[in-house]
Amino acid sequence: MSSRTQHSIIDLVSLEKEKINRLFSTADQLALNPFIPSKGFGKTGALLFFEASTRTRMSFETACAQIGVHPMLLDGKSGSSLEKGETLEDTVLNVAAMKPAFVVIRSGDDLDFNDITTKLQMPVINAGWGKKGHPTQALLDAYTIRKHLGKIEGQKVLIVGDARHSRVAASHVELAAKLNYEVAFCGPEGFLPERFDVKVFKNFSEGLAWATVAMALRVQLERHVTKYSLANYRKNFGFTVENLKGLSDKALIMHPGPINQGTEMDTEVLQKDSRCRVLDQVSNGVLIRQAILLEVLGGL
Image 1 (spheres, rainbow, N blue to C red):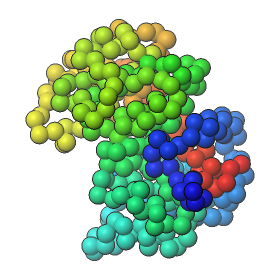
Image 2: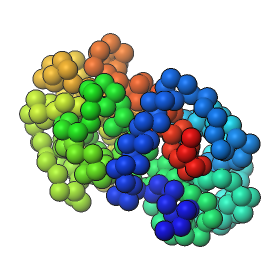
Image 3: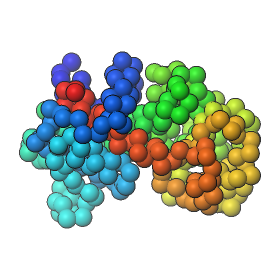
Image 4: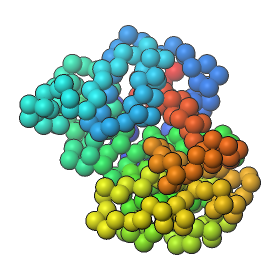
């Protein structure tokens, strides 16, 4: 296996449990001192975000800054040669020719991450690939669970909402197999995935009674042919004060963002429920992504 392929993170199937534990351990160290000197000081890193992002993009930018790597950011098509008809692959190859230490990519299904990795001489990190996966998000979620519940093994993570179109859900299915936690889905029929063999709760209250972690997903109505009533969604599956009475006081409430407040999660839950760890997920996202960059740069 080449060093490039070894350090790339495209999915969680090929990421060894030993490396995951090492990332968590590094994140613990970074929580105490985020400015650990790295082998990447003075180098550049390419952040190619062909799809919109706030948390993922800015956490990678912050991670770069804290280890002394200068981020070369491409944020969408505006102002780039993509507006002139250049393909995504040509854009990636041209940026890679500038010799960054690594390439972080977020795009739709129209770019093949596995194929592009074979064409580059530096590690590739998946920052969100279509509906296929979002490994760094699943890792930061698991790290957040570990931080607050003491361990990730044996936890019961209920993912509520549009799992059919969710790359976050896809990555959690992969990660659960590595770290020995359970994943179940809950939501309207049209939101439930067809490609995963996991537990499904069609009744929200039953799912909440089972869960040690309840994670809401954004309702991606733009991906549905049949429109679903947002009012009905909030009533039946929304993280409202009333609905969440069935969730254990010791459980966690999470959301990978962005949140449609008043649909997937009410503002009162987001801001006042002591079980809610949404903003902590964001903080932990910097730690995990910084740990990943340190790993691909050769470790501490």
